[in-house]
Length: 236
Image 1 (cartoon, rainbow, N blue to C red):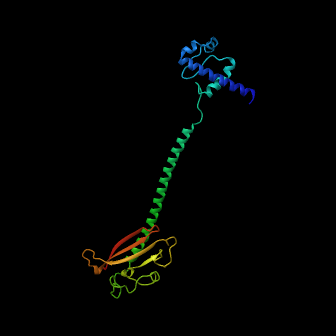
Image 2 (image 1 turned 90 degrees about the vertical axis):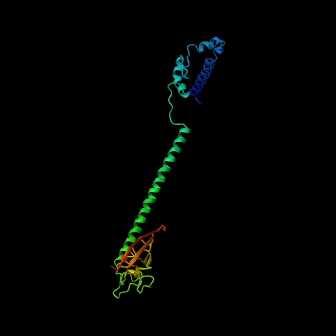
Image 3 (image 1 turned 120 degrees about the vertical axis):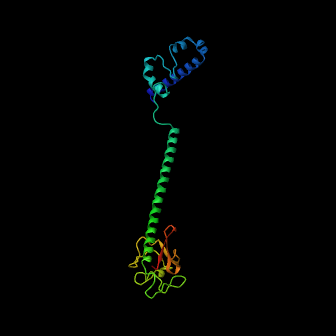
């Protein structure tokens, strides 16, 4: 430590001792009354205001006093930076805010993905349901072969695109993956969906069960959630 720094530290200690004595004398004036004359002269004209220690400085003290007042939080000093407590509180608040934003983003993203999967499953079910509804109700030979009667020409993935089928032929039809109805080729990116078709004789108002069936298409999405679409098909 060089001489200038030593002098600076010494003046700091002197100023700290001066403030301590001045505060003690202010709180107990009898101490100053019994003090030595030189001590009284040292504090002559000094006033305490708002915990600051303004007094008449010597020329040497005038140069160092702003630094002392700044170091000791005196009048005119400014706090710079933030305290450790403020920093911790700031970090906690930011962490909570970021966690909340990420939670909302994850929820929105998950729901968006679920909506897309659900929409795809609905499109598959609608397509297969329409395919079944477009088939003849009764074959050219007058056979319906609906449950509980066995179907003589059940639909399979192998004969789906090439054979002639009526509505009841789709009873029990199922696939793992989704295939084109016209070519029988697997549709890319839909291999994780499965579907099944059930045909059930069911009366519709005045139409008897012999002339009306309920078609139910069930599609299971990659998350294992089933989606069902149903429609009636009559012989009329």
